[in-house]
Length: 350
Image 1 (cartoon, rainbow, N blue to C red):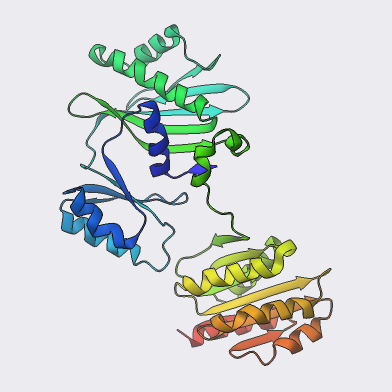
Image 2 (tube, rainbow, N blue to C red; image 1 turned 90 degrees about the vertical axis):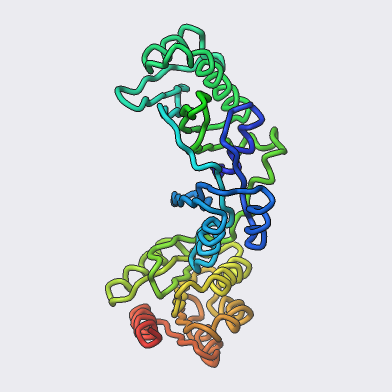
């Protein structure tokens, strides 16, 4: 389980790993009150996403509010929490530390200049001679050796106590000569969560479908009951001159709930999607049964965007007939026709 940086900071503070003051905002309504209550005058602003890394600097409380409101207003935003670090970090001597649990456990430190250095971690700790070797190879100034030694031991201890699989962070000296950690990436062993009940609230409710963002400027969303079917549909749309925004792969073992949840995602985050193409290749489940499930959920979204449905498999014609009268919907058993209809509809709605 990969954690967001703000979650990692909350956990690692328990091990006395030092950070600059930070705050996180999870509701749009909390923006102004948080900044005023905490008297934040400048900040590094980081939307919390596991797929992208964005940073913005703001040098006044008004600028902080404006940047966050702009980020929150994005139709295709991929985050629901924003991390604020204040004041804006200004460090010297940054060292990147990573601990990776593979066949053996290694800690690797990359200095600002020169070669990286690795030490094998045995018996859940680094021995004194290993720390001395790190300090020597990293050319740590003598007056910072003790604090560097202590910080590395805290990081290693946190790694084992949290039962992490991977940890990476940068540590650096602030102007007052103290070490601070930032740029944190932390992966916890999901199989060990039963021993850490305090981590369970960090887990997001698993989605009943898989979503892949293809192109933020795309105008067509594709929903299919299988990865290969979704990719084939996306390829066809691209060949025909269309642009896929996102792919939704439906769980065939939980079709109705999975389909309904994916539609809710599209309906409440419409981005600039003009067309939804649904490609169902049915084997064990009959197309007419699937059509009845689709009928229960499709009306709200068909009012705002064009829906193209392609059925193939058991009882294809019966499934198509059930959906023929659905408004703003085109139904066919031909993937070529469905793809062309989707691309034409997207161009017509531009």
